Image (spheres, rainbow, N blue to C red):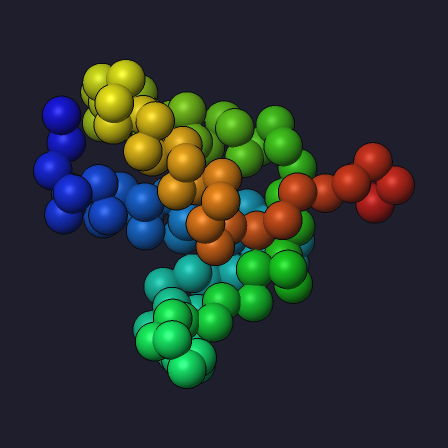
Length: 96
């Protein structure tokens, strides 16, 4: 099992690569570091401004799972965070 601290870093690294491959290209670290904070203390990331096709998204996520040799438990946490987190939205059929 991967520690929470290490998993958090892997998630941030994966977000960076997702945004580097999105349309338009983005820099997640820069967005994260400069994000406004809402009244609940959450950073506001404009993820709806960026798009990525599902295949590229899945290839990148799978690459991180393989690279870090994640067990099933860590994969579940990682996939949950990636899919429901601050990643770019998926391209729809009409704008692919």
